[in-house]
Image 1 (cartoon, one colour):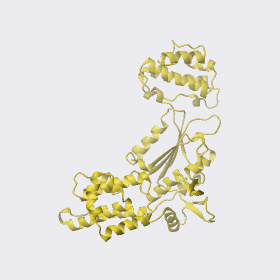
Image 2 (cartoon, rainbow, N blue to C red):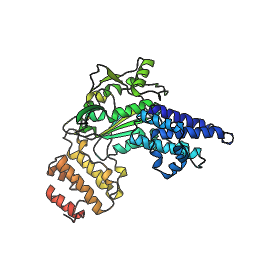
Image 3 (cartoon, rainbow, N blue to C red):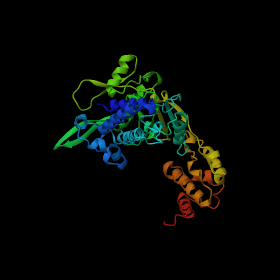
Image 4 (cartoon, rainbow, N blue to C red):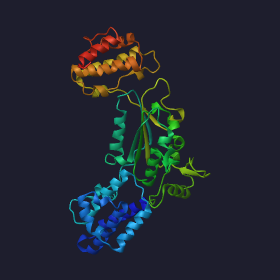
Length: 427
């Protein structure tokens, strides 16, 4: 029995139980309790020994020697159940909750269950499916995405619907989409296909078309998005996404479901991806479900484009600038004038706004020591990351409030002075 088939049976049992008139349904209730015990054991025959409460609920059934119990455990061996550790934990918690309810426990709320709740999760009314927030570090790009997730998509309590990936120079298509895993068995090397994180999320989103799912790619400037997600680029456009997916899919494996969706709607856009290990000449089909949002963040990079041309038309691209009004009053005037001076002194540079300083390090600066520590980060950024000449940096900061007692003779002198005043006495 496939995982999704078992899950569908559990949902049906929950719905039936919710419809029962509990004053006149002892027989049906007893049958449901028997059914849920069978299914509970079918997920993991050792599960019930891990918690004392679960043992009490299942003890009589587990200790019985009848043919039904033997049949269940024989089937269990044949099923070769493959569930991720996280999924198994969620399933166990939900099943235990339902067992409690069936056994007369009070204050058990099925609406908190990820399996048994019949209410829709999340909100699909947010119209922007592909969003890139770009700007200098510390301007609240990730926080803005969190606000969308929590308040627009209503996924604050459904973190399992969200995949966040920090992109770096070593990120690869094999990690995110598909690759080859190598293992050893009985002294022989085995090559197996490895499904990447993004393909896993696409699969889950396809099976739950009425729930929003979110892919967050942080710091995309560190690599090429085209290379990382490959053919997925073609499918993320609004008119290429698979819409009107019918949620009668619990009995299907993913490829079976994709084939059914394409058969039901031949205009559904898809790409074909090869099998990497076997010699099959067939290709698997991949679609992009309309309920999967892609949100990206990017800082500036001097050595490459932040976003490739073919991605620009597929994403809503918004620039996020530093916000003076959120900075602590203690240093608000300093922060405001700092960024004004940066734009003035660096005006001959291409895009001088890439030299601006984000507000995140200044939110809680309310005394001298905190100010020196935050300002030290600015100095290091201009010296080592932006590689700005000290004469230009001095012109930016020398007339600002709060810096009049600092040594502005050189980067070295200023850094040593700030480290001392910041209280780094272990140096």
